[in-house]
Length: 277
Image (cartoon, rainbow, N blue to C red):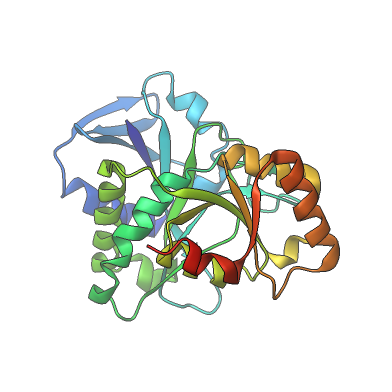
């Protein structure tokens, strides 16, 4: 059973919740201060706090719910105001600024991520003014032991309130939850900008999915310990790096960690033909 988490402090999250509730039949319950909606396929929990500050929420909810995967339905904010659907894993490879702990990573859900991406990819033509992108690992919660990821609408209030955008996300969440495909190859990505353009191309065009991703702005503190932990948590079988942005000392860390963790290493340009859909 999978669990979608929404927040009443988040306009996009509430918009997605409204769409979800219109698509399935739910029984409504309340546990402590948390409203829960249960269908035959999945559950939804409505939190009273920002999702990025919900560390240990899986431990709290597991007292009265059974689930093995968490899908955070969230807003995405950016100053450029672009209309975008984003997906990423949470955690802080460096200092924590927005939830979670410093140098701490949540456990990713790369298979659900991939199934969601495949679903939303087929729906982008319905919203030609929106684009899709992965994001790198950032913000809290980092203290999540259950596989999880953030599924977002960005980047301003107009987009957060967009009903059709919310419907597309809700449909894709449900399809990802119900998908039985699990034969994706899991990678950890290194390099690129916050929106991980090489990794985004790869997840859209190949049989590869991603757990954690680390942007080039993390290189001052990205080390073997964090990278090894990312591979372990992601259950990754390969490391993929953006050869245009990875500097020599980070490349050395990548190959040292790959040997230690017994995973393959690929440059981003090498995987499209080898792992094409």
